Length: 572
Image (cartoon, rainbow, N blue to C red; front, side, top):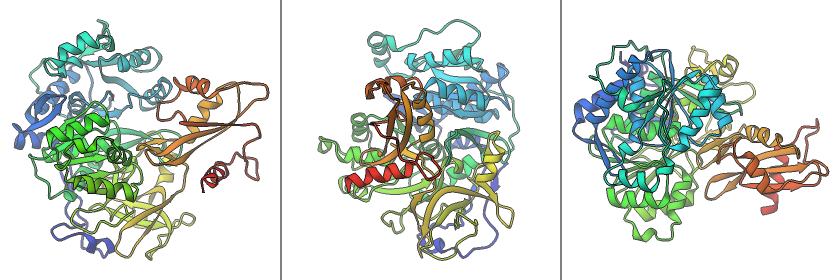
């Protein structure tokens, strides 16, 4: 079933006139079952390259065939509609194959960050009701999942061979030089080998998909609060947001262009802006397992890609590379920046050095994730997140009475209505009711928690955050989670965690701590203590110990606001 989300009639929104000739805000946006994206591309561009992973190449027919085989193999194991299956691996062809295999048979995919600490993984497995996990046979990932088999509801692991996706002679060299990084896989019923699961005719049983009700992806986020929640993204959410991005990038060449795949696919930004848009457009993804600055520069120099989504920290790192002149980056035409505010000087410097154009977008997990973006071919105003995506209505709302503000320049909460807005939070009706609120005409309006203004042309500017979310290198870090982990140390009496501006990362995590009287605690001891409780991006980059009590509000609560103001005052 395919649906067209075009609204009835033309509405007089200020951003309509800001779209360039040949592109309309009210252009039709299709919604359909997610696997159809891959099926259509395989039919049209089957012999075209789909993936280049460290030199191993796949066509779109290869990816399509493998996804169908894995889909049938999973069905033969009793895995089907209603099951939650996790994806726990770095960027690699298996991620793309497994994602679309799950979409084919109506299984809900749950994305997991391979860097998560065991405590966070266990919580997400239990909360999401994940029963099966697809991973690779690297010790880094498998060792964590083996522990989850014995301590959570997780019952089976699908093991993909990392060596099998490396080209000759890298596959042999990896075994001999890095053999310790490969896990020893037990021969038991809890471990299912990818090679065994895909040894079939590739004809899975047909499954009926309700694109508006069936959950394609459970994407975990703290939203604008600290407690991780699973955003329920339907097939319609996923495909419509990809189609919206496709409309924006209408000038690109289907079946010809190349995409840089350095952002992690488990992150919602990369899921749409790298993986799914490439499937829709038939682009080749030049893929790295993880971001490495030197490898990324070599990749662009060698493969001559045209499109590169990245977070501001990556653009800044490229700008400041000491040997940047040794690399030819002039093939880049369109770069999408997201995950954090893009400093104007970083944008200008990158564009000067490469000739590419950076278009800054804005979104959040609850919107699959993109709500707005600067539009190619239109005015690219500094500091803006652009006008709304096609078929997306953005409203500025009074944070107190929730009434929509009318005039340009009025400051309020950014709220959005569109086909990409999530169904709700998994098993969190109260949180869903706070974040999704019905408008007078019955539409679900997403309250983002960000404060913004709109100018007279319908361009939006983020000016503040309602909550204390920290965004470091494009990742969300929730101060409360970090504080809770620090408080587990017996020497800690008081703790405040907050984000501070940082040129390279956007923000860095800092902790202010008062030790208990008579107790000793060093920065090194604290970081060692946190290693199994927090992911690397959550562990504070700076720690300050104070002898006096930390600042508090009039009612005695620790004041994050006051301590951040003290810190910023030192630098002014």
